[in-house]
Length: 312
Image (cartoon, rainbow, N blue to C red; front, side):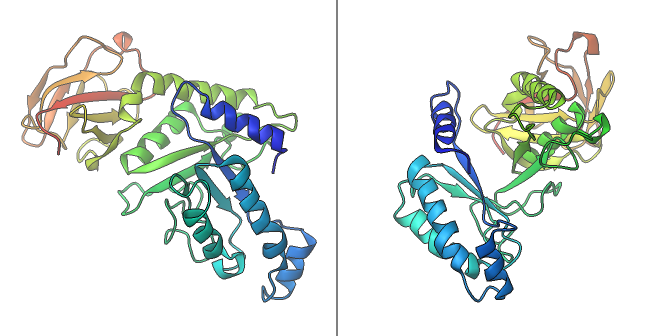
């Protein structure tokens, strides 16, 4: 864990932010070379001195000190949840802790718990099923495809491109998931410049296309039946459906098989304000006339807004 002053400062900054943010903490259950943990492991986990005397007291102290809204444990893979005493901690967390009414947790509480238990599933790292799952889930991935930390030997090809990063976020949200984007700081705490650039590019895209991501939920279909790389989300409050073209600019026409002229009244393109797009009915779906790319503000991926007659 970081020093208490640093964690407290980060918690205060998140809670005092002008935008809606939630404070969460990561905790590694496993400490690879801790002597007490190694003793328990050598005893085939029939003893639990590490959990009793270090892990549980630290986790409870973490909750009491910082009152996180998200608890993200990790490193559970050596043994099952009975060794980690996960149910004991969770019973306290949800019944008696100061965050019992607000906290959410992931599924990493024992070797048998991923994609089975928890407020949201994380499965393996880079979970991206491409289909709607029956439970809330999260795609946790790194900008460096190889490492969760900083590598002095990393090349530019080791990092996700802006197109790949934004496409991953789109696919994740369309299938009902959260996107957790990890950066690996250097030893002085600075984020490497290429990772800063990717975060700024992600922010630039979201600043324009965020309506299709923030507060959006899955549509009745996740991706288009005719054109690859088109993903759908919806916002029932606004009575809008979003079709996000995530595989590059389609050209002057775009055929969509998952929408019909009976589903909506008008179509707009985010980044092309004040203009509605022309479209025509097709035997399967619709055919849209797209604007010139030079007139469009968005980069990397492009969001069509369907103003629907009724929420589906």
